[in-house]
Image 1 (cartoon, helix red, strand yellow):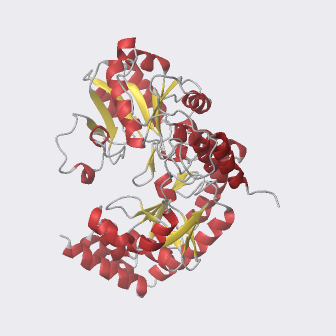
Image 2: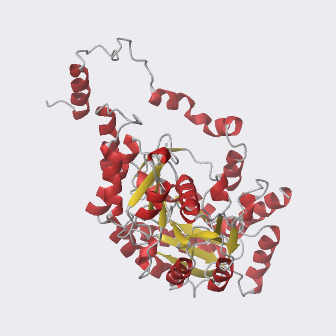
Image 3: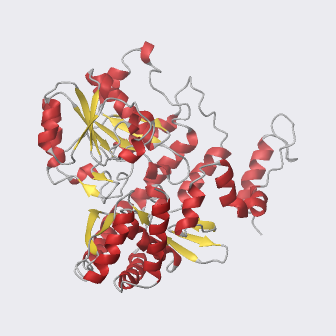
Length: 489
């Protein structure tokens, strides 16, 4: 019988070092660490551990809304619990798992890095992997020339803010109302959600404008101190797209005032909207800086990327004295770079962007067809596999009474009433798109199929039918949410 490939790899490594006794290079016995045994012993304590040592409110919130599940494993677009029940993932870790979980190509790439014993993060050398990933990434963005690799989306935004300020010699950044760009101090300064900003002042002196308002943009630019506008082509909070033609007009206006356009594609990028980057949906748009992350990781190793025009990078890194003026301790590490390279290869070979466009269009068409059927369903919007389902005030008196009670307690409770039965009854994971919003955001893995869409549509239709009866388990849960909202005031 042929040897197991994993066994051959292990034997090769032992043979190379002249040892087969489990010792490391120094001759010490390798420690016995059994992760599977640890999880088997302590995994059932997951919610208690979270409450005791981490965020004290997370477990409480999950218990309250009935999301306190015990998932045992995952593959592709599906989760499985201890009983083997299958759950459909329509959240993708807020967009991280574009390829689903544990894609074999990405998994193999990360494993290969460990098997090769690479001299990672030497600092005073030039590893080939960051250059290779930058080359591949830039091939999708004609007109952009260089990349900085960090470890997250918020780091990618921080990099863009710093580079824009330095390159222009100006300090003020404009951003859109309701934007989300991260939660570190710099990115929080351009965060349009007041709930995230509250209590963390003072922040940087940046300025919000309404999304799509050219007049407001022009007014701020006339002050002469604006370094850049940062904008999501489609906002994650609420799934609101920039109006057609606005991004190009904003770019031209910015450049006329010697300011820069930064596109935050942390969630929309790497195929999510049916284009490699969402800004590419509009002709003539070429941002000065683009932020990417999430999907580039392949779901394995955190990575953030800030792509930009060459002159900006050359101005920031203008001399050998400034060679380390901006860096990240774990940026460009070998595992992250290998995961990124493997992810881009899968996206190309498996035509993932095309699938996002095709399945996304089909999905939105089917959802939009329900708007006239259900009075609680107000609008379906988005592009590719970034879809917003918005609920609104019904016309009939019976439904309007319940809706008004929910809105008086806390806006956003009805959308939460929808996501709970989708999980509890139909094993489909979704979530609301932001606090105080009656919007569910669907951002599934980009590999979902039309059969997955069928499964969601059947479940969603059943939940909508239940909601429009104006009574039953769904509205009983709504009353529980109202009590919880009132008690938290």
